[in-house]
Length: 316
Ligand SMILES: [Zn+2]
Picture 1 (cartoon, rainbow, N blue to C red):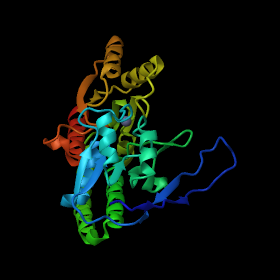
Picture 2 (spheres, rainbow, N blue to C red):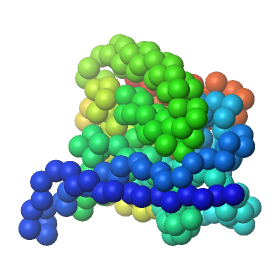
Picture 3 (tube, protein in one colour):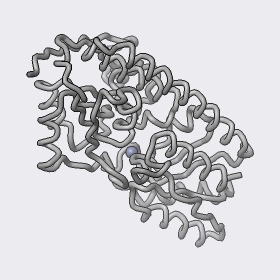
């Protein structure tokens, strides 16, 4: 039986302004769960993306059974919940999703479910000052590509599980701590690899703007053909501007993403060729979906490592 009340208290962060043209202060949600788990394990969790599912498994261990809605190659910006997903979601005891509108077409469904099932959009519980914000106060949802920030996301999952199932609080805390140590090591590894690319060659061009947190964290300039969501198409001008940038700066390689059509990147390669600059395909990066389940790239740590290796190999 599920007797749960969720109380979200909103903490105002940042300073406000009356000027409508200035972005509004973001609000950080704080986790508070009233009521407890019924001690029947595993806890039924539903997660949207592979990255979120992997995070919950890493912190929840055997105490949770995680159903992941979006598999390999699935674009979360465009994904719509199907009938089977809705039934899984309705049957969940806890729902985790990325939030910050990553799951753009599932917003209403997740809002509706959140009224009856404890639901957490992880990004909304992070420190707002650490989020990249676009014009119009739109937060970039690709938080998993700053490994340190994702480590804080592990803390969000830990706090939710501790609040929901306090009997096993120590277990969640120690597993989160272990996982965060692995993430610290991963962060250092990626930092080292990107630093191995000569500074003037540190320019990452991909299908859409999924790597801005990666760029900020590891010191590489990033450009996506499409913006932070694949919902809006790239214009001819976006493509031409990138071609000019690549030609001017003699960029060696551009990258495609497993969850996004390679069409735009192909146009860029063609455009550069027409202007006498041969730019190579640097390989495929995992941006908004992990690789195949059961392979190293089918885990968060494996996908990030694959990306760092691919970028290093193509750009150095
Ligand atoms: Zn994306």
